Image (cartoon, rainbow, N blue to C red; front, side, top):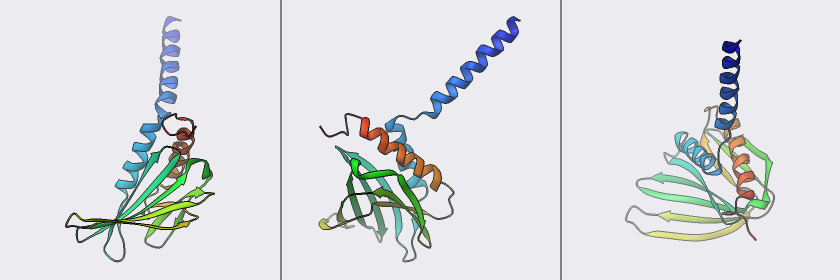
Length: 167
């Protein structure tokens, strides 16, 4: 009888421990998203290495898509209000050679072009607003579904986190 009780207690601990381990904090989720995007960077048809990352700001989600060729980095930087992200509309799209993961923008998306030249010079331009914010990753990785879920989880948690909410 004692042995069965001990086994029951151990199993209960494992179940609750596993459930707690599966619940990631906002910072862990952000790290997971960026690590996954970096691991699934790709080289496009014109030979440019492409890597994406996301950042959180006060009330905003920012996505960087950076292409590097011959030591020059050219980044499209997209920024949308956290309130203007529909987490049910985070969907992957096959773009032929890579996957674009749309982040479900329902409002205007600010866009900047940032060029960091190999010489160290930086140039920045504001571009016209668009209606889509996306990150890019290699095709055929099989991580699209989990990454979509993690991005939705990230936005939902950021909306509740005082570091990222707007008063």
